[in-house]
Image 1 (tube, rainbow, N blue to C red):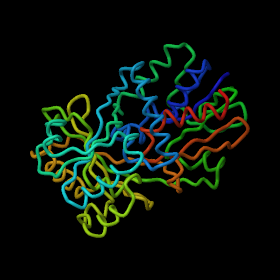
Image 2 (cartoon, rainbow, N blue to C red; image 1 turned 180 degrees about the vertical axis):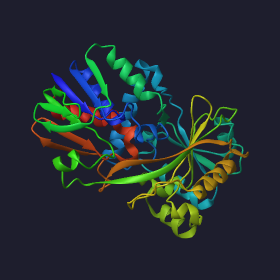
Image 3 (tube, rainbow, N blue to C red; image 1 turned 90 degrees about the horizontal axis):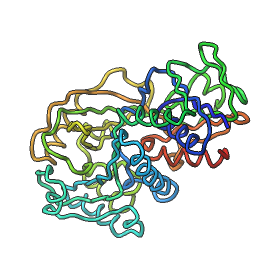
Length: 372
């Protein structure tokens, strides 16, 4: 079978991966010379702990298995099963942790409670003052800046994969795709994984697309100078991720409002160490378009202060700042929007902030539905 995949972010690349794994030929088109969207502007988190019960958690757990298999085949992806610590600093935050630790899926997620001494033994870089941390052993990380090229190189080595960058798709029909150079690609099936690009041809094919766009701000620091042995989150992540919903979370929200800058920008702190020693930190969430074209400094000041409080030392200097935009299903209980827009043509979009985590399993499900 011949497959054409449009979009070389992580979602499109994972669809190409599954097609190649099943013995098919793939032509992979990308409008940029290299993917520059949300797939390279994220933490590289394989984040299981915060996922909602049901389809979202099931998808994340399957994706976690697939990421480990992929990481063993493609070392350049930088996969590491480092787990995460959500560090709590107040009794109300600890109550949320205790609530989720008592649920039936706690073991499935790899949840454990660590005392302050256990936290420091598990991750010695955390030298601040806190009450403890929620450990999620299932969480992992990859390298967003190197994963996609490494995956493509692995696929190309099969002899059945062709990457065609710098080509924007102008027309899609059953069995064919035409790019802006006039080249036509014939195939048995087409997958459109165009990320946050929801206008133009995508709107023509799916005019009532139930997907919105979300803007974020993030940054990367100079090397920390020591190992951050896990990914790290602060207690504000409880407010953002659906796994923590419940009475304890409502008590946290009503009893401990976020600082104004964090509330205004819908913030949490996530912190992941890159293989070069730097820290990726973030993030903010903006939902109302038109989005700003510039980045705002106040959120970075908040992130620096919060990270320093957990580390017990100043954060290394920020070397890079960026904004990103991802596509998210309007009904956030839906893991992704998958729609057959023409015979043999599938549009897959809107995983939101779950894209890096869930893409391997999303691609697998698409492959199964198409019958690759």
